[in-house]
Image 1 (cartoon, helix red, strand yellow):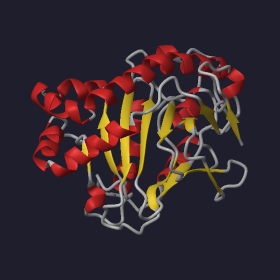
Image 2 (image 1 turned 90 degrees about the vertical axis):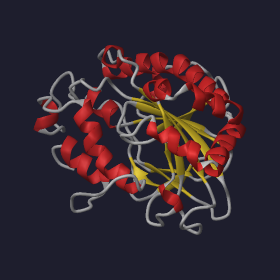
Image 3 (image 1 turned 90 degrees about the horizontal axis):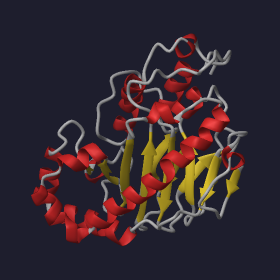
Image 4 (image 1 turned 180 degrees about the vertical axis):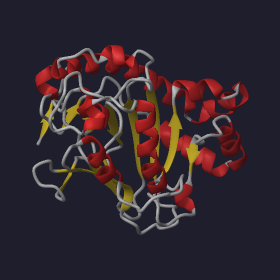
Length: 303
């Protein structure tokens, strides 16, 4: 079901046909710093508001779960090279002693080490050059606080079931269990991932660009009431102008995918309608089908 490696370097066999891969990361996630940053922003709403103004489109510190009992019961801080560059020096200086420096150093280290390495191996599996489709280094960094102080503290829903949109993600956990993957051979069956495992998994973009040779895994996070859980995630996606299509026609794919009728930018926005609603940061404008059902219908000829 999953492969395990104690290496910092991968072979194609480590990734091929595995729903997810456990890795031994080059650095550990700075969970004390992550907790400190969430705690500071929670106690200083003016600073949190100023931080969000630097990226007014979506915000950076997202706390919908403190007032919305129906959404994912988690807090998130979403960063990227672009968002980090927009943060005023005064805010960076204020947040520096509260974990920001360690968090940014961590994400810089893992992105510099893993992005090209993993894309190289995925290229081998896909039989095409994927590195050239990631020339703009489209990466995002997310830290997550599955805090006990939410609008629905007894809820088990930390993060709803979904498949990531991008090429691959690396999930770092603080030792507390909660991450679950759906068994590929048994839809609806959920398997717990050890709380101390660091996980590499692929998303929809990898499935399409590889012509279906790379698998994506559906996953979710279940909360344990009364237990605070932290995680950190590196997301890697193709350049936004890349046409989301296989190198050669794949019979199982839909005609729009085979013809390259949409690009990564459109695909991200289409998926985002559902995940932003699930996370409490957007409104739902259609009949409410879950994200993976919609996207499966879009990508596969018969889903």
